[in-house]
Length: 312
Ligand SMILES: Nc1ncnc2c1ncn2[C@@H]1O[C@H](COP(=O)(O)OP(=O)(O)OP(=O)(O)O)[C@@H](O)[C@H]1O
Ligand SMILES: [Mg+2]
Image (cartoon, rainbow, N blue to C red):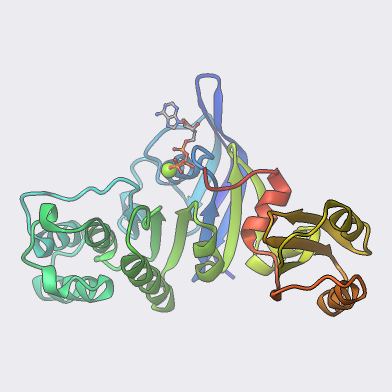
């Protein structure tokens, strides 16, 4: 598969701080590439370097097979960027904003009208085209920000945390829109610190921490990195400490926690864990209200890899 973005040995320092530390990765044509990491891990800095908006100490960036330089306007015209901070004109209406940004690249009036309409449809702003940004809710404003960035139908789209502080309806609309852009042929880099988003959206994921790659791969590949295979939750009251300790010694059990009403038992690889555990509970005469089993989430993987919550 063709490489749309090639980043090699990228290093960016702010005085003593290594914001990006010898980072190398590729983004392949037609994929949604998730750049995941906690606050300050270097997501926005990586994007700014890829776009050559800031200078960096070391490394090379290729886009569409060509070296990216600060004045590579031919390459830049094929990229759509949705920055983390909303950047639209307050004096212009929704329609005029999208038309303005699209007009930076598309001169032909008729073509532009079609492109602007497509963008409005994609983000579902049809009922708001005459509104000015100040009148829009946070979610609608984010959707306008996205429409402005993608209206010229760029081949590469970079979105920096486009769903921060939006309501669930706007979030779903945005995620559906991004999938549609991919299905229409765009390559997408999507940064976020929401695990569940990359899990449902991204073809491949790279987890960044302190400017370094912590792990990368498909969601399934990342889950295999974790030692835990299965998480069993049991709803039950009044479980004594000694019984909990005994559970800790069971075969394949990795970790046990109990908060007074939920017992969570994580298992390493192994088969039929839940049925064996139910048999065990029966043998011990431990009664419960509910029991269910889950596969580990990306959040569990991240916790195991780093020992901390991703969302901070
Ligand atoms: N202009 C700057 N001057 C000094 N330090 C900076 C500057 N921009 C970013 N940094 C630092 O570089 C590191 C990476 O920041 P960056 O904004 O890339 O993180 P991020 O992953 O995008 O975080 P967030 O999720 O908060 O947007 C942070 O420690 C940040 O404080
Ligand atoms: Mg950022």
